[in-house]
Amino acid sequence: MSATAEDYVPPEPTVKIFSDASTSSSVDFVAALDIGTSSTRVIVFNSTGEICGSAQAEFQQLFPKPGGGWHEHNPFDISSQTRRCIDALARDAPHLFAEGRLKGIGITNMRETTIVWNAKTGEPYYKAIVWDDVRTATADIVSRMEREAPDGLGIDRFRATTGLPLSTYFSATKMRWLIENVPSLRKDLEDKDGERSNVRFGTVDTWAIYQLTGATESSTYVTDITNASRTLLMDIHKREWDETLINAFFGDLVDFPTASALPKIISSSEVIGPCHSSGALDGVPIAGILGDQQAALFGQAALNPGEAKCTYGTGLFLMMNTGATCVPSTNGLLTTPAYQLGPDADIVYALEGSVSHAGSVIQWLRDKLQIIESATDSEELALSVPNNEGLYFVPAFAGLFAPYWRSDARGCLVGMTAGHHRGHVCRAALEASAYQAKELLRAMEQDSKGTDLTTLKVDGGMSMNDFLMTFQSDILGSKVVRPKINETTALGAAFAAGLATGVWSSTDDIMAMWTAAKTWTPSMADEEREKYWSAWKRAVVKSFDSDWF
Image 1 (spheres, rainbow, N blue to C red):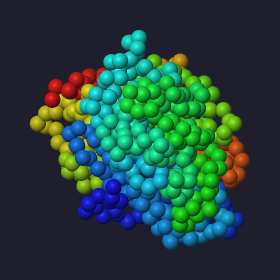
Image 2 (cartoon, rainbow, N blue to C red; image 1 turned 135 degrees about the horizontal axis):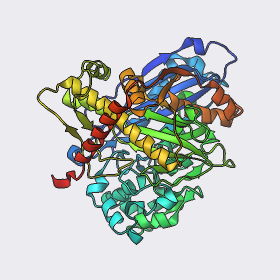
Image 3 (spheres, rainbow, N blue to C red; image 1 turned 135 degrees about the vertical axis):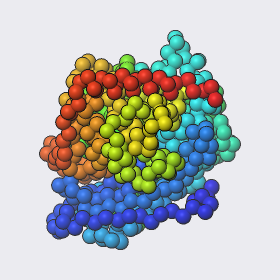
Image 4 (cartoon, rainbow, N blue to C red; image 1 turned 90 degrees about the vertical axis):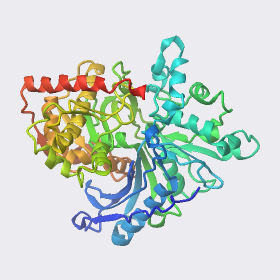
């Protein structure tokens, strides 16, 4: 497998330095490695939670079967762009990496994306299958397992153990596809006296740590509780791989070697070991791992039961802290570990609603329809019309996730007339994120026994769109608050590493650092809100049962 796709030239990292936050020689630093769906970033924070410097670089998106919903990444592209970010930031801001001042690094990542490689050769068997890839729907993996579910449980056959429905979203379905369709992988898994022991499955955090610790047979092979919980293979109550689940997914294919082919599950905040062969990070301890949405919850200091955040990124993810209580969902949400601050600490749980397309819809308007030149144009165009004038955009490009879990759904524009133009389309695309967030919040309030969330903390790139945040507040009928530090995902990973290395002594320190930058208060009349909401619900139904094509 080549390190880069043919004719692809990876972009140079963009470096930003904030000198005011890093001038004191007595300040400690904590770094975060944030690997998202489209880019990787290294951000260094000081001990007061301020950003001192960052470097960010995009990596290539691969769509080998666009009509089939396939989405891949080159694992080497992710790791090489990460290394370039580290080198670029160290070159432009060497004081941030001065010996003894950088106390640790935390890792946060897109979850569910699945990589499998050979630990001896370091070579992936296949490209990374991205979290929103839906090939396992058409490969009859998910639907077959749903049909075969005992007692008519359907997609909920594993929910009691994992907190998750059976879906293309989660890693185990992707792992099964890889075993079924990659001959070299299947051959090595069946080689009990040879290469079988070198096969390594992992999510992006596990791949990143393997790379940061030398990319050899002896490199660290771990994942944390939040990433492991998104595989459909971990018992979220016991914090361990479940052999019954593993046998359900792979037992008819191979004798799956759990001990060597799945990483050790650890807590979200503990010293794992030092980086080496990683340039400026050599010797710096890796001390925290959090899946991206759990990291955002932690970075938003939503650390008490009932507190919630919504991240508007490539997808949209709303998460509410439920404390030590593992709350089962009957409304299409996910029950998931939020974090565990040390190997002996209690697990903190959350309810989560996931939407596959939010910011990626705006990218689609830019790159595919080409009706805008930049993402910021969408706000200006949305404001060029007084309202949506009956146009609704259901962005079910990869089916619908929570609360519907309809893999048969597909994107649609509903209510279009000859009078609509790109301003209406942009407005409908932005409003779609707000409607979907409301659907998740409604389900969350029902699952949490009527908890009424009066304030929603927001973050992610789309939270900088004031039109969207205004409409979000209006359609919810609740306050919406954006924090001073909007890079909450990276901040959460830094907080986890800083707690493990003594930069911060407790979560009280973290809560004291959170401050609001802007608050939106609803002004829409109840009657108008209900009109828009009921029209959206009718539009969603139009996206169902699209397997006719």
